[in-house]
Image 1 (cartoon, one colour):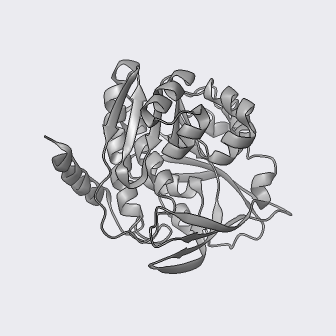
Image 2: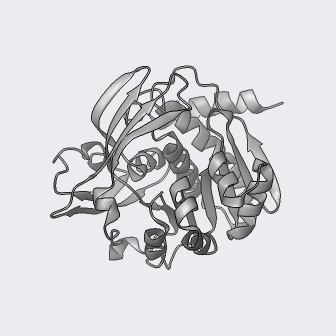
Length: 304
């Protein structure tokens, strides 16, 4: 099975204790696609402005497992830009500047030949746009979305509508607490899982993630990463690894829980690899064999 993703494409400037990069390839759908492509064919849907450099998306275009047929280059528009600065503790970062540009305009259109996609990930963007895209995915058997604190704070009603129409949602621990008004992550996760059709995954950064499904919580620790260069995109890679594995295994509804538990582990592993370099640099130098090797190490570490 293939997996369709919609989300941002960004021109990023990142400052970290390990160094700085300017005008680097970024964006939620970019990281997701590269990560998911190790597991399953990816259908990419996104928008850039006419200012986007001609070879900017070359790494994705040259990936035989990513179909870029859903890319729109919008005349008269500018590409999304983000500038972030990480603290010495890279779990903390400041947004120096953000230019929404094309992301503040109408969303992309899913090509007709993509609309039979059965696995769909709506990467972080305005919930109104996610709902609009949702309506173009009538054939999907599993639709999962990401969100962020901005929409939780400003678009509560729309986000609530979105949650009721998707199978799963991925968000971080602070977002989960904000969304529910609770001060306990487990309580928050169980509540959010009850608001979607099937499951919720709460990311806890270096401390791992927790899957909530069928009224139960399944925690998984983070991989003990030592060489942390740039965490930007790690969460998107987590989602890409998770959704890619699900699309590859295509579990029945009865086996979704066990498949998700393994998928969350694969997401954790590929995110731990991605953060070892800026932008997509690490993911462009590894193979599925490298991922499986670290997955085996991670499995051994978490077995008791």
